[in-house]
Image 1 (cartoon, rainbow, N blue to C red):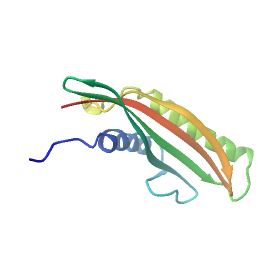
Image 2 (cartoon, rainbow, N blue to C red):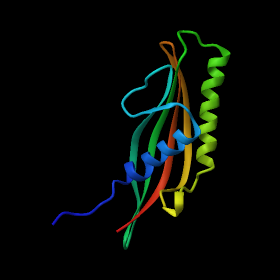
Image 3 (spheres, helix red, strand yellow):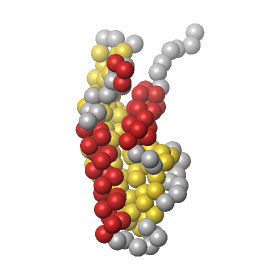
Length: 139
């Protein structure tokens, strides 16, 4: 007999992040590599058990949301401002959706951007944002 399960990390977390980002920004969202002069890249990170309960489990998920801007080798004030504005806007978007249940369908709670790491290399400016949330799965 086959078990039944839900692909929580993808169906609840990643798809919901994609929806939130797509609704807020007119920027490509990718899963394989950055494309074009700017894009988001979503990469699953950790999936950690918090607690087993009698009919399920509570887990913490982390997802890397990377934003890259191709600057053509120049790192101007405007380039830095654009990357930091995107990161600040993502941070606020997640803060506004700390508990996410679209159409009353539970996805996560305690959603947050835990860290943002800015970097530059080879004509690219980036903001790497670690999204972390908790999701309760019932059996």
